[in-house]
Structure formats: C-alpha cells, structure tokens
Length: 140
Picture (cartoon, rainbow, N blue to C red):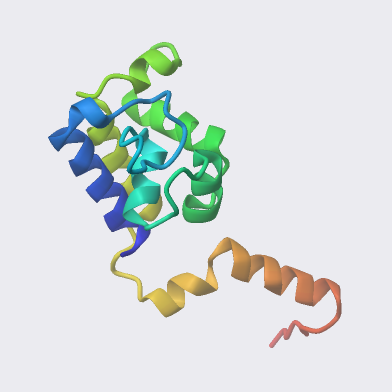
C-alpha cells in the first residue's frame, strides 16, 4: 500500500471508529491499547510495528518531522489558533488527513520508478555523489 492510500484508509478508520481516535496517544495502536492518533493510524495502515512512536512514523513513512506534519494539518484545517484542541476534533480530522494525502502524497499518476528518483533518499544520494566526485555533471 502506498502512502496516499494509507493516509486515506487511516482517515476512513477514524471516521468509522471515532472512539478509537486519541490525539494524545502518540504510538501506533496495539492489541493492548487500540487507541491511535493520526500518525499512529497511518503507521498501522503501513504495517509499522505496534507501539512505535509516531515521530518515527512521520519521519520514516511520510518523510517529514512530526511537527511539520501537524503544522501542515493545522493549515489544512484552517484553524484560527493552532493547538491540540482542533486535532482532537474527530469530525474534522479525517477531512484534513485526506487533504494532506492529496496535497503531499497525491502523485498517483506518476509511476513509482519515477517518483523514487525524487525521493529525499535519492536526491540526497545524488548530492552526496556529486560532493564526492562520483557523479559528473554534463552540460550540453
């Protein structure tokens, strides 16, 4: 499952099971604690190990620091004042997640092989290769 699909499935889950959503539960859901926040649910959909810290989910699965993810969500929710109160609003959270998926991961029309070229890992590898003289730049 790609990230776009995982975010949308996590949003669906939150809509269908609002009692299991908790912004303050900063880990992926587990058998012993089925609660999950946005990042926890996204991690669950991407099969991240139960109990994983959501900062790791944001960084490893979405490619952004946890704070940047929430900053983007707040902006998409058009909150007059940033704070966790809006992120606890289970009626607004799924729509914000879908908007996030569309804006930041909605490149479904681009083949994965092409998308991978522009991933943070690939572009960093190219930059390091240039810095170490392993990649020559051609100017035609």
